[in-house]
Image 1 (cartoon, rainbow, N blue to C red):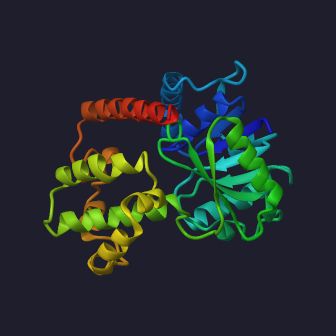
Image 2 (tube, one colour):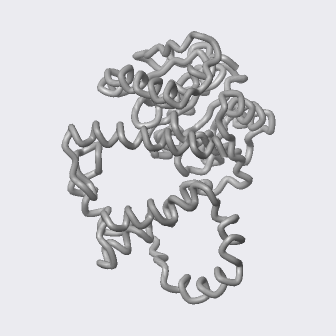
Length: 306
């Protein structure tokens, strides 16, 4: 498996492309948006610089990534196609249907969906056994885990090939045993986000203080001791005692908090629009991305030296 096509050069695509190229793959990439293609080269170059800082071993010296204007040119001869297009079921199904007629039956089709069940993405595919979830974590060139999610019809050999590929490029495959919405990482993350947004809306804490509390509290701790190990460290009796009254108080809302829906309706989407929970100038965005990358690199190195 040498030839990989990446479809989508937005948030995830450039980092995925750089990581796979660094792992010895021949990578092609495309996007339907010309503005995304125009900035892809600089984003890929930035991802490579981070991989250099991480001292990620390179397999071979060919790290060239070619950008293509058409889907057909991008996927020609591909052994693996990874889609990173927006989180819309119909949009993804339409793309996978088109791919069905463009690639060989042996070409694996992987989705970087954040939470759409893979079984739904297999619908109508002539070879559903090759369709699999390959959920990278943002930023994909820094965070070393990739969730591997089989749909109802995914063949075991497809799971094995993707798992082997991930290990071969020095990343960590995370096998997901059931194809549930959100898989595992995002189910845990969104449970935390739901509680955090509610606490801010209710005036318990402001946004800046909440970030400090989580980053230097549970975030700091969980990077070293995982949740299940933390139960043992704290004591199951303590968890049972606190959980018996606290679980009743935690947010269980099924909708999205108005703090988010109102800002989204106003176009305040976060860094991409210059404002969200916080406000951002172009200079601040550049500085934030650089500082966060440096800190994530340092943390990863520290954890790898455990």
